[in-house]
Image 1 (cartoon, one colour):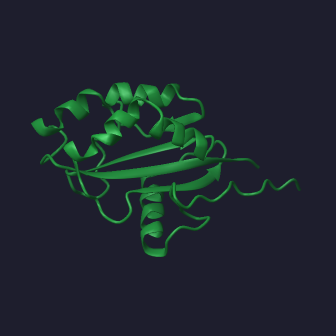
Image 2: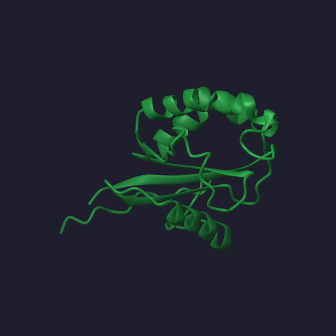
Length: 153
C-alpha cells in the first residue's frame, strides 16, 4: 500500500467575514492561486465548496476562520507549491489579511493512496498536533516524518 500527504491550514481573517472589503484582494486571487496548486507537480486533490474553494465551509462556527485541505504526492511537492510559486507572494503578504491564528495553523499526515480526508479528520489532526506535538500521526514543515513503509505482504 502506498501513501500520499494530506494537509490542512487554517487562518483567522482580519475581516468580519470573507466578504469584508479588507479581504477583497485575497478573495480576487483565490482562483488563480488554487489553479496554480492544481497544476503543480504532485498535486492530487483539494477541498472545494460551491465557490470552487473552501471559504464557505465553517467547521469552527466562526466566520473569521477559513480552512484549506489538500492532498499531495509528498512533502516536497507541497513545499514547492507553498514556497516556490505565485502562492509565495500571498504567503509573504498574509499579515494584510490574516491575524495570528495560534500556535499551530498547519498540519500534515500520511493517508492511504486514493483516500481523501474529511473536514473532521483534518481538524482532528490539527488539534492532535497542537496538543501532542509532531509525530508520525501529525506533523509540520519543520518536523517532517517520512511516508510509512510499504507493507509488501
